[in-house]
Amino acid sequence: MKTIQTDVLVCGGGCAGIAAALSSARNGAKTLLVERAGFSGGIITTVGLPYFDGLIDKPSGRFVVKGIALELLQKLGVAKEGAKHIDDLRPDLITKYWGSVYIPNVEEFKLLSDELILKHRDNLKVLYHSMACDVEVKAGRISAVTIANKDGLTRIEAKQIIDSTGDGDVAHWAGCPTIKSTPLMPLTMHFRIGNVVPVKETKDAAKKVLIEAHKEGRLPNFYGPGLIFAFAKDECYVHATRVPADATDAADFTRAEIQGRKDAWTIFNEWKTKVPGFENSYYIMSGPYIGVRDTRRIVGLNMLSLEDLQKTTRHDDAIATGCWFLDIHPPETTLDKPFTGSGFQPKPYDISYRTLIPQNVSNLLVAGRCHSASSEASASSRVTATAMALGEAAGVAAALAVKSNSEVGVFDGVKVREKLANQNAGPFSEV
Image (cartoon, rainbow, N blue to C red; front, side):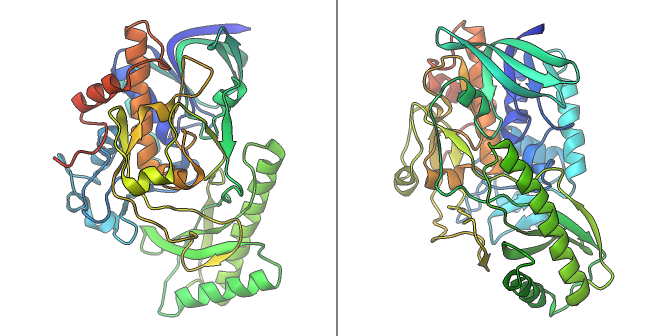
């Protein structure tokens, strides 16, 4: 079996992974990024969700995430140089109800990710169409990760590893304790419909026909529906499907993809034949992958809890700030609000470096929605901009650990925080 050696291996090129890889490479570490799709971006590009959620503290309008997430928005023309507030964003791309911002073209995001990777090619290599599939653990550290791609199986020997798979795959295979919510939040297939001319009756009629389809058994579950004209005035981007499944189970994940595509097409057909504004519409596409909200999370050295959000707990080793509301989706049909409960809106809260450190393995960090958080807290910390902040912190830590001949599992999170501050990233400050 072929072997590749590198300083830092980043498994997964989603929101957390692309930030981790760029951050590691920029801090001098030889970095390899592996991603199962043919492009980076995770839920933004593989699912088609264009939102930078968790960027903005909704009550004040101030950004709580800077660094690479803000850099990406600036390069896409969404944010001004030196942006610090919602008023510094393109007004036509803001959803003030959610306190979020979206990008106008996910294809441009793919190109930007590629451009940044290639810009740092001296320190950063990428293998698309590749995914981690096994690990070797010796004396409490990962000695190698096996990846699978068109070359077959390849061993990657890395000094430090970042698991940004979204599902905590590497941590799980390495024997680190993990947890899952009960029940798991459902999966959603996002899709787009073109040539829609909305009229006054469109929104209410769209909901009514889905309720009827659900009652008649033609649509197992749905929520909302969310009809969003994000990409063009005549193009409807749809949040509506809801598929209960465990995306860490290969057979169940496959079933969910099949069901999600079927449900999306059912919704389109119902609207085209029965809803004003959709008469001449056509189905553009669904996401390459169904969207996954919730699977494994590690049990880290610190666990972000609902109490931390309620009390705004502070940490000396904070490396990121969360601010999104408790966005919990139930696995059954709901109307109007997609989430359950109060949708509690926390004040900006600290996320400790220790939530990235799994137990039992010394050279592994876990970044993104699978970091250490309770079921309730992860409903806030799982979102895109927060994941980018966690990934950027993990990349800094991995590079610093390599440079100091240390391990990320014992590295001082305060030093990570200090380094992040030097690159206009890290936790939110009131100052």
